Image (cartoon, rainbow, N blue to C red; front, side, top):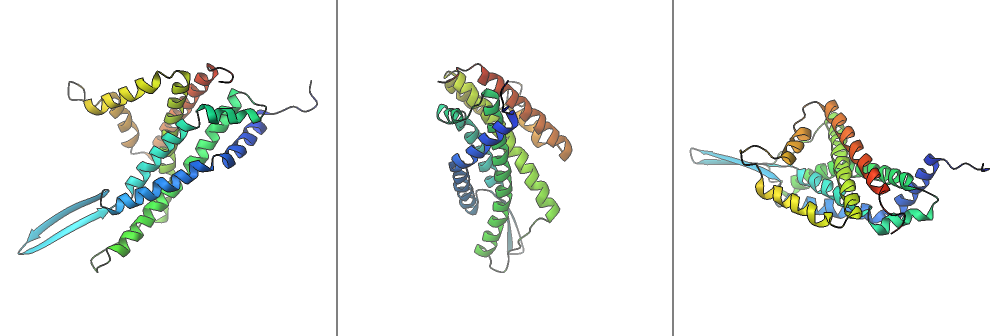
Length: 250
C-alpha cells in the first residue's frame, strides 16, 4: 500500500492541462482555417442568390451565410482528432505515470474543450463575416440581418455538438490507422467510392448519407443532442478498446 494514492481523475486533469499548453498549434490552425473560411465566403461561394425582372426593372437578392466557416471548423476537428492519435502525440503521455485509459480520457477532454472553442468561434466568425459584408456591399441597398441572443446560443451549442461529433469520428479513424496502416488505404478508398456512387443501384441514399440525414434532419434540438452524445460516446468507447490492442510503446 502506497502512502500516496494516485487518482485517475488527477492524472487525467494533469495530462489535459499539459496538452492544453503543448497543443497550441491546434488552436492556431483553427484560427487559420476560419480566416480562410471567411475569405472564401466573401467571394460568394456560400451565398444564395435569386433574381427577378419586371417592366424593365431587375432585382437580384443575395443571401450571404457563414456556413462554410462551420464546415471548415468541422473538418478541422476531424483532422485534429486524427493527428493527436499519432505516435508523436501519444508518446507525450509518457512524461506522466499513466495508462491507456487516462491517456484516452485526457484526449477526449481536450477534444471536447477544442470543440467548445471551435463551435463558439465558428458562430462568432459567421457574425463577423456578415458585418464585413455589410460594409463591403454597403451601397444603400444592403440589409444586414443578425440573429437574437437565444438563436445565437442555440447555434453555438449546436455547432459545438457538430464539431465534437466530427472529432469523435476523427479519433476512431486515427486509432484504426495506428492499429493497422492498411486503414490508410482502405478508409480513403471507401470514402471516395461513396463519393462517386452517391446513391445505390436503386436510386436510394447510401448508408453514409442516411447517417448524415439522421443527425442533420433532426427537428428536435434535445433529441439531436442525445443522438450526438450517444454516437460520440460509442465512438470514443471503440477508440479506447482499439488503443488497448496497441503495443505499450511504439
